[in-house]
Length: 564
Image 1 (spheres, rainbow, N blue to C red):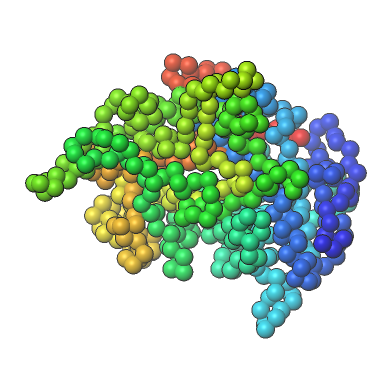
Image 2: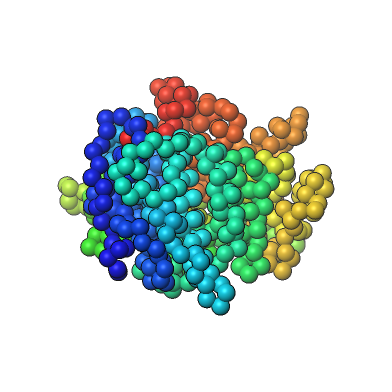
């Protein structure tokens, strides 16, 4: 790698007692290293090295993104073995010295992106095609995604789009932007690159490089979702999912009861297998991590969520009482076909655990991706309680997966005024036939002239499309209890469906780092801090509701970490 692309210390900044400029955000030490020269990036190897270098910077915030989103929500609770810093995160008492509060890591990514965007020679062309356009679009997406994470964690943040290379530049006071302002900026910033193809670098490390790059249509959907532009968000998500060159039907992976007779006999699981490895049909984008510390940053998520040799089986976080209750309370049914009489019957699973396994009541996804048992280790240093989470891999940190995008599409459609269409994503899955059968005719009429409710009959069929709720709660399409009730107004229906989507996000994406931010997005949309506060304060169950935590979270500034 050429010297001018080596990351080196370029600024000798002294931390201030209080944050009044961007100096502390652009610390320059061995861990926060920047480009050293304002030299034009005008050779293909320059841009490749630069993109890969920025990608390595994303590793510094990968674990943290999951922990900040998961441990501060309501679906996880800490064990007595959790570190003090993790406890502070979960209790919303983290200060500027907390090891997970390092905004300079985000700004190191942003600064490297700003450098690339300022100095990449976009005028160079070959066969009249710009040479560096693909990399330019990738870096734009890196920067946009990083700013979104930064705003979710810190609220209003200093907004910088020029590379910081001198102490004088770092000493300036930059304007702050909140999440809506950032979203509006990056929608315009990314839109020109919406159809730019990704660069093809082949395999880097253990993954094909295609997994490393953020899909711009999905980012646009996220920015529109956060900023209240719901119809646009739904359109971007749907365009991504239905791209004819790479269509992404929801698939049929699920964990379900098997009924050869009219009894619930055992469980079939094609759900857990979609996690933990790449490539598969579910993961779309991920941050690669190193397999050992000699090569770089190694993920520590397994030591938080699972029992390992390194943590002597003392995992630090586990599914909360609230998650277990939510999962248990789901109605699970199975359509039983009597082969002798050709009759069909909808059977509902028993409310008691199967063979003394408590997670076999209600929704089965938690049972599928999580295991817990007592062990006899024969060694006093090891815990006798063992936990394993199948979603967690030390080799990569997923940032987007297919079912998550379908749920965000449903969230956007619901708020755009299509609640029965959004609910159909959960109950039936969207195909043209299901739209005609299960979506309110007024919604179909309202969507006429758009593609929001049009699904290609070649790629989206009954065979490859199920309702997302069916991934863990049986044949949701036949469940008479899983319906939108008669409500007084369309607004009431929208709120009801939104609550169901929030529950589905919990059942589907727990352990993945989205939960707190999902709750934040809905609470901001409803202008109701108590919505978020009541859920997080109830993570230990109704009998252990934390009034202190509830009161703390009624103050919105407490949702965010303090900037250094």
